[in-house]
Length: 350
Image (tube, rainbow, N blue to C red):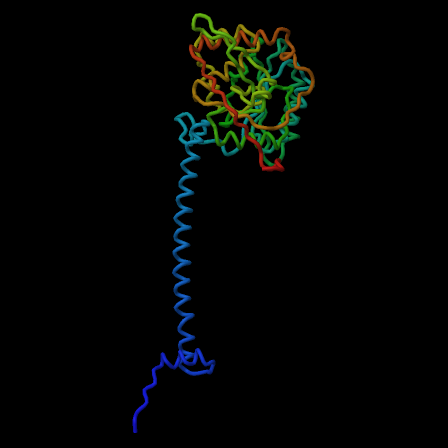
C-alpha cells in the first residue's frame, strides 16, 4: 500500500479555503492571536516608555523654568542669613495710629478676629498721649475678638516726639518673622490678609502688599535724573509698579533692624520730613533685595478720616521725598514689575 503524507500546513490552508473544520485549522487559528497579542504588548510598552521619558523631561523643564522665574521675581528659596525660614505660624499686625481713638478701636477689633494674627502692636504717634482708659479698652477688645484658644497678644507703645519715622522702630520687638504694617484707618478683610500672608511666605525677602505705587523719570539735568512719584492711576494705566506702600504690606521683621541702622543722614531726613517713612522703607527693601515688591489683589477699606493722607501739597512732598532719599541712598534701587498675586479661589476665568 502506498502511504499518504498529509502536510498540516496544507491541511490548514485547505481548511481555510473550504470552510470545513479541522484540528490543524483550529491550531493555526489559536496561534495567530498569541503572536498579535505579543506584538501589541511590545508596542504598548514602547509607547509607555516614550511617554515616561517625555514626562520626566517636561517635569525637569518646569522645575528649571520655575527656578529661573522665582529668581527673576525675587522669590529665591535660598534665603540669606537673616532669614532662617519663612514664618509658618502667624504674623504681627503693626498698626500706625494717628490720634483717632474710635477708628483705632475698630481696627484692633477687626485684626484681632483674623485667625493667623499672633500679636497686635499699636504705635501711637499722636502729640497727645492716650488715656489709660483707652489702652485698657483696646486690650479688652483684642482679647474678646481673638478667635480660637490662642489669644492675640496686645502691645501699645507711645512714640515720643510725634514722629511718623518711629513707626518702624518699636521698643518691643515682634516675636514673628512676618510683620503686617497697616495704618489705623485701613481695613483688610481677613481672607485677603491670610492670602497675602501665604504669598509673603513664598517671598519673605520682598514687601508684599495691597497698595501699589510707581515712579517715572521726569527729566535729567547734568546727568542727574529727577523722579516723579506716581499714584494709583499711573499703576492702573500702565500695569507697572515699583513700590507697595507700608500702609498695608507684609515685610520681614529684620527690616525693622535695617531701618533702625540706616545711615544717620537718611534717619535725620526722614525724622524731619513728614510722610516719607514709607518711601524710605520701600527703598530700603529694594536696596537689600535688588528685587521688586509683590502686589496682592484684594479689596481694602478706609474708615474715618486720614489726617496724614489729606495734607496739602502731598504730591509735591512725595516727589521731594523720593528724590532726596534716592540722593541719600546714592542709587535708584526700585525695580519695576507687572506681576500681581491673585487668589485662584476668587477667580471665575483662567
